[in-house]
Length: 138
Image (cartoon, helix red, strand yellow):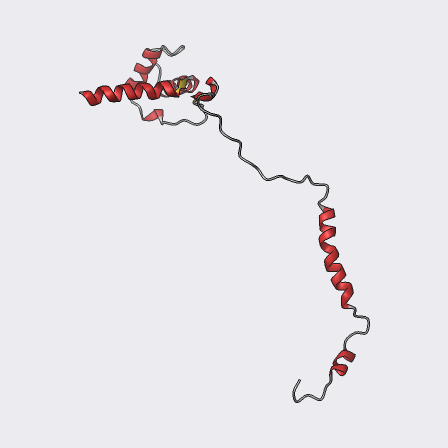
């Protein structure tokens, strides 16, 4: 330090005599190994690798068709008119549903019937393509 009469020896004399910085470095180096041994009982996780998707032509019929679940409705059937729900009941012959059933009961019955249906997606797409061609020709 310029302008100071204190020498390095005087500064070192002020430090505690038993300070050995090499021990602290050894403790810092030992800490990661202690942490690693602390977690050694846990299983090592491998990175997740996505599985390849099956080829669509070789896929099983279960893979090609899908079903809807009642837990996740895709449309709000309450928005339908009660006459539309009654026509659905008549067309599909829903069991246990009479002609004077309330709208709420019809909604539940139609939702259960729809959720039980499975569809072949390829057949639906083919039917859509055929009808689109027919309407385009008109």
